[in-house]
Length: 61
Image (cartoon, rainbow, N blue to C red; front, side, top):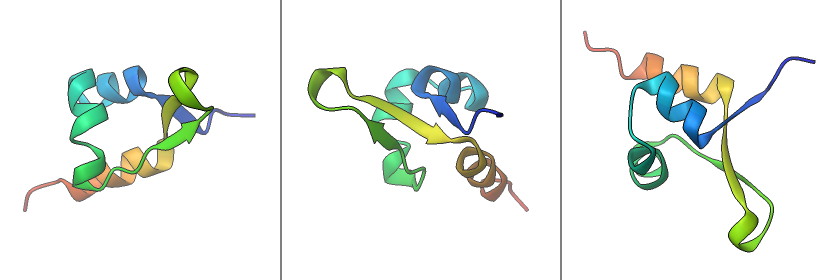
């Protein structure tokens, strides 16, 4: 089964952005994370199709 999610590091690398940006700014700009786990061990992940669609929406002109 192909992967459906990217972790925060993979998302940052795919978008050529910092990890800080992924955690702090991406959700504010409409890139919705999924939270897996609870407390300090919780991991943010992003749906690959959502990341690609969001990136496509950022295209100018």
